[in-house]
Image (cartoon, rainbow, N blue to C red; front, side, top):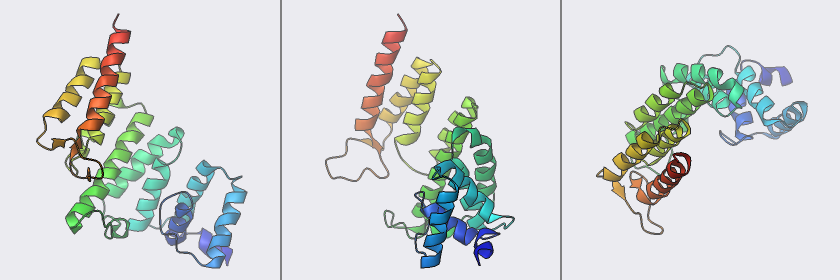
Length: 218
């Protein structure tokens, strides 16, 4: 019985993934027990459990299996960055796994839910490129993510990467661009910051980059 769960079974791989933090957590008592056994066999090392999720998918090629591979590699440690890049690109080049986003109650329409899903996948891809030290490609992908959602996150990610690369003026220019957007605003307390650029966040990062520039340019 165990073997049928652990071979070519993306459905169970997704359930195992839920024990790391994402996925469908509805399991039978046997599946719960099996997940606990896998964690023990992996010495309770998160990275090893994520690798196991990929292995359990086997050779199955479906939207679910591609999604599990993409997320499991992208959530893993930096040495798996190239695996994440390949898996996320493969996922984005095929049909999406709709179950991952169709019931997202934060957004009213199906298209907005799909866009939010794509936004997060592009952020994962950009992070993987950073892990692989392809920083220019990472910046390019962070910029592409802006097509799907209005958010301060890509601007901050780009500015932070440019800061690390000591391109301080470009980092500040990126944050200035965010400030000038027609979607930029200061959300009030308890007001949703979805589909806007939160200027509270942008201002904070602008100050950090400017302080960093002043300290390291002397």
